[in-house]
Amino acid sequence: MSMLGMSFLNNIVNEKGNTEPGPILNQLRKYIVSSLHQVDSEFHSKDGMDICLCAINKSNNMLYYAGAFNPLLLVRNGDIIENEVDRMPVAISEIMDNFKTREMPLLPGDCIYLFSDGYCDQFGGPRNKKFLKTNFKAKLLEIYQDKMDNQLAILDKTIEDYKGENFQTDDILVVGMRY
Figure 1 (cartoon, rainbow, N blue to C red):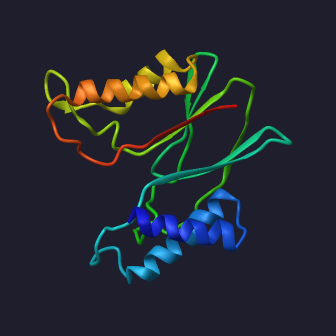
Figure 2 (figure 1 turned 180 degrees about the vertical axis):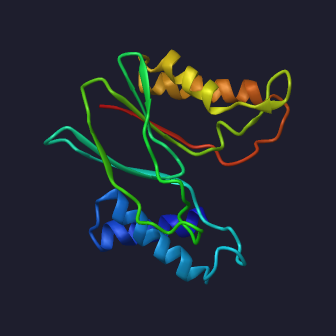
């Protein structure tokens, strides 16, 4: 699904020139539904993707984003902002509304994080439980002032230590940037 999504995203952005997150996700959903021959959410596979997509306009210091279940996290001055997303996947589903492009102003020093659910869903720790989004957000608040490469190292070590001897449950992706 990731390879299919990347191919479609490249087509939507690079060949069609679309740069607005909501319409990109709408087009991505059309491609996925068509290529997987999804016609009814009740009787077909639930294949699809959760994603958060963003674009930054540096001339007006605005962040534009759209999310299919996956939120964007922004850390500003010690506070974490979890941005609203649409509660539907990029696939056939009961809800087939258009994905909304949301916007927010960016300030110097803001840290933006996009991530897959793999980090939060990883099993481990002393009770072999999921890491959870609350722990992930707490870790981001703890490290957001570090250099980005240091943050990467800390996040890697944290999840590896937490995972212990367990297998990795899912793909893990965290993208962080400082504005």
